[in-house]
Amino acid sequence: MRLEHFITCSPGVEPILHAEVKALRLSNVEQQVGGVRFIGSMHDAWRANLELRTAIRVLQRLDRFAAPDADELYKHVLAVDWRKYLREDGTFFVDAQCRESELDHSQFVAQRTKDGVVDFFRKKTGKRPSVAKEDADLRIHVHIWKDRATLSVDTSGNSLHKRGWRKYQGLAPLSETLSAAMVLHSGWNRRSPVVDPFCGSGTLLIEAALLAADHAPGLFRSFGFENWPIHDLYAYGKLREVVASRIKMPRKLQLVGCDIEHRHLAGIQANAESAGVADLVRVEQGDALEFPWKRGWNAQILSNLPYGMRVGDLAQITQLHRDFGKSARDQCAGYRVALLVGSRQLTNALGFKTWDEIPIQNGPIPCRLLTTEL
Ligand SMILES: C[S@@+](CC[C@H](N)C(=O)[O-])C[C@H]1O[C@@H](n2cnc3c(N)ncnc32)[C@H](O)[C@@H]1O
Image (cartoon, rainbow, N blue to C red; front, side, top):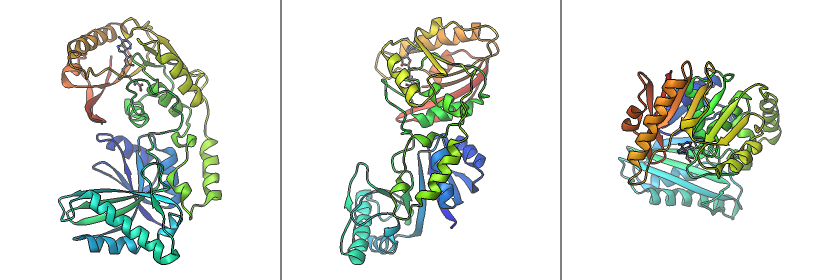
C-alpha cells in the first residue's frame, strides 16, 4: 500500500535529511519546512526508521481533512480503524499543534482526538485503551493549520535521536541526529582520520564510526510500529537481517578526540563500547589548543565548540575560538573542517579566510554549521 509519510528533523537539517531520503531511493520525496515527505509502503517506513541518521520521527499520515470545529475533528478520528495500531488494553498519547485556525487550543484538540480514539474502541470492543505520556504504545499526531487537519501515527515511538547506544550523557551532548547531520554535511570520505578536539561524550566520533561501518543507526533499538497489532514481525526481522549484514568495521580508520575534562573519558569509552566501535575511537584528556596535529595528515576536523551560555563566559569563549582558529590555520594545512559554532561573533573569531555555513537549530541555541578546507 502506498502511504504518505512525513519525516521530521531539527530546523536547518532538512537538506541533509532530504539527501539521505533520496539515497534510500524512496519515492515522491519532497523537502518541506521541518522535514521531508515521501510516499511509500510500511516496508519503506521501516527502512526510514532503521537507516536515516538525521531523522527525528517518521509520521505516517492517516487522513487530511477540513477541521473547522471540534465535531468535524472528532468525526474523522472516530472513522479510523485504530485496531490496526493499538490494542484495546494498550496506551496512547496525542501530540497536537494548531496554527492560524479556529481550533487554536492544542490541549483541547488533543483531548477531542483522545475522545475519538477511546469512543472507537468502546463501540467496537466495549473496552478502552488508556493515555500515557511516557512510553505510550502509540503516539498520534494532529496538526491543524489554516483549519486543515493532518492526522498521523508515529511509526518511530521514541525520538530517533535515542539510538540506544548511549550510556553516558556528559554535560551538553550534541544529539545523535545533529552529530550525524554534521558528519554527513562535512563531506567526510569515511576513510581519512577524524579529530574532535572538544569531544565531550564522543557523539560525533561514534556517529562517524557508525557511518563508516555502514551500521544503520536504528539497529540498536525498537520502534513504535513494533507495538502495532498489524506489525509483520517476520518480514521486519528479514529486513533487519539484511540491514545488519551490511555492517563492516573499517580496519584502519582513526577517530581521535580530546576533551579538557578528564571525567568524560570513561563515559566515552562506555558509549563507544556500547555502539560496538571502541576499536576505532581513541580519546585522551587534553587541551584542544595543544592537540598534536600531524603535518600532512589530511584529517577531517569535526567538532561542536563550547557556546558560552553562562553570563561572563563570552569573552573567554571568544578567545578560545580565536586561539583554536589560529592553531588550526597554522598547523592543519590540507585538513577539512566542519564546526558547529554558536554565533556570528564566534564564527568570525575563528579567523578562517573563507567558509560555507548553514543555520542549524540545536535545541534552543541557533547555531551555524561551517565547513571549510584549510
Ligand atoms: C559543546 S561540548 C561538546 C559536546 C560533544 N559534541 C558531545 O556530543 O558530547 C564542548 C566540550 O568542549 C570541552 N572543552 C572546553 N574547552 C576545551 C579546551 N580548551 N580543550 C578541549 N576541550 C574543551 C568541554 O569540556 C565540553 O565537553
